[in-house]
Image (spheres, rainbow over the protein chains, first blue to last red):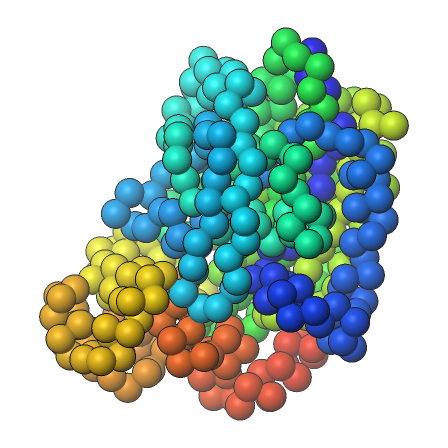
Length: 284
Length: 118
């Protein structure tokens, strides 16, 4: 059976990608943010995962309001990135995977998650920035990626409880896949931030730190929130916590998790940027 | 939900806002394409008509008024693509919305780390 090695929560702020393009990692503004990543990378490289399931939200590259899925999953051999309009450099194609994707799709529909299935989809910074952070220099070609997009852009959005349950269903699907693949899950985005309105610039550090604490052993403390409450507590784009909850949901059923990394840096762009690594008993 | 308990300074991109903002957001979505950005810059008014913007939306775009764009149903994710045409990032846009310079807005972001919200 496929093995779930752990979950990683990471920011996906586009400015990070721009900073990496320009080689600004050692600049004072960026230094301590980037310094958080090597231990997580080292863990990842040691584990040698075959597949990464990445929960992210599309910000208007693949999906516009004309047809915007609530939950979408890719089942393709390859995913392209493209111009997002404001200057982040395009990255080379991301390697896909279809066998586990279709297995997950079947499991989800059988368990009442009627997702949108994409045999072709462009992936935006929500997916590419974390990938580039984990494998700098575009050295991610060997890892097979399954993109899972959650609508965090237009209300109504899936409730936190639902995103968590969705992640759990994907975790169950991975655990029931008849292969020997090693899988890691990513939740990208967040943490608190608000880009729009007179309230722009709102960040709630205590709430972010509380969420990262609860992520380890008590995720259900967060699943009771409505998205309205998340906007109140974490800003308009703080609803991206849903991706972290989906990642954490996938780890339910893995027993006790070991937290190997937790860090938080503020501000990066307009955001409180969190990084967290939760390993299962399958990890080396 | 958003209608009953508004959060000050926050524009919920919900169904009614998305309906109102559709032409504006569709225009800004087109800015993923470099040729579309160039076409907009060549003749803004003609570009508005291509996407059937309302008069309120046209006026907000002409004035580069971010708050008015939000009130006209603009989604920040698509407005960011519009701002990108002029080389503005989200700190610039944050400053424009809050009446601060970009530098003041950046300092404000740093201060957020010291605050305890209720």
